[in-house]
Image 1 (cartoon, rainbow, N blue to C red):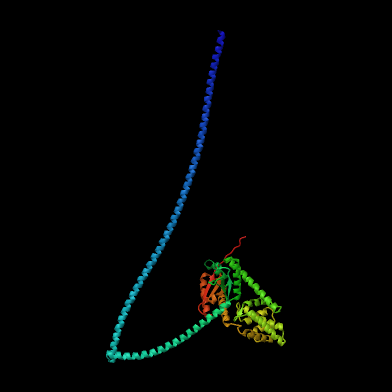
Image 2: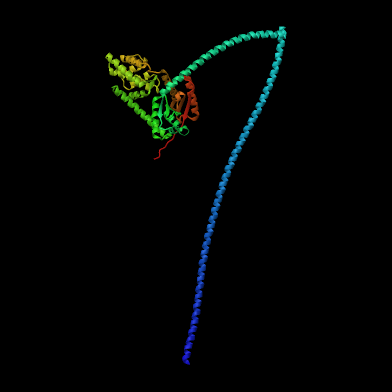
Length: 517
């Protein structure tokens, strides 16, 4: 029995211990779960609080952004309202001014109407008074003369008839004389216009050149937008550019052959290059002027070399080169000088004189014609003075000064120059007086304009119908530019004779440039 009791006790003791252990284990497990739950809840509360703060911050930022946007819209709306208010104020002021002006006009018209009514009333009173005086005069005449109304009327008409016949005869004679004078004046004007038209055709042949174009599209590019390219070209070099319906060509017109040749070279360079705009035009014209100066220098050197004349000053050679582009009465001055040089040399050889000296006098005798456009005085005296300054001998200087007998000849060489100059100029067809007068008139036009202060350059264009004057913007103000144009026009009217009208255009412009490095 005891052997069974002990295991049972042990079993029950074990069961009790297991139950106790189980109770203890369950207690510890429940406590851990509670702690875990508390930890999870704490973590969740912290995250919720963080999320709440972030959302609150985002909401505040959004509110601030919305408020700024709203304030910007309000400011913009206020600005627009202020602008609208200012426009309305200006319009109101304008309407007030117009209303005031209309009121003034209305008052002026009312005053004018009152004055007219008063004048009419005064005229009516005067007419009535004159009528009364006329009646009194007639009655007084009847009383003094003792004649009836019919007899007085007959006598008066007879007297008036004789007076009217005499006055009519005098009037007819005056009208006939006036008509005759007017007819003569009209005839002279018609003849002058006809001569000028004929001269204009001849002059046109000698004062224009043409530039061929590869295609018609280039005409539009040469003209440029609103004509800016063609105006820039004309202002830069001083010629008149004529773009008409003639296919494949444009015409350059100027009385100054040097300027015209430079313009032709510049235009051909622009056409071949294809780039035509104001900047390129100024560059091309500047290069053309430099090229023409090189040609002038080379022409003078070649002429002296071909004629075997040495020790001629470089300035005189340059002036000889310029004579290539000068004409006198339609005759090329350089060709004329070479011809006089050869004629003088031939005559000097026949007389046993110094041929080289004679040829030197002949070549340089018209050198002043390259200067007289820019200086005052005759070309003979200008040429003599220039030759003296450049070291020429007194014989050469006197021959130049005396070849138009402005100074007495001091040597046989001067006589030879006079004879050779006459021979060269008097050959049939050598000279045309009309062309020379035309060129002289255009040169005089430019000189009249450049004599005024502040004038940089002046160009006579449109066959002398227009003078374009370029002034220094720093010296001539806008209000003085118009006055200058009137002064030049008045001087032209007083000092020159010309057909038709001459337009004087004063151009004042400012240019500023800077270089970026």
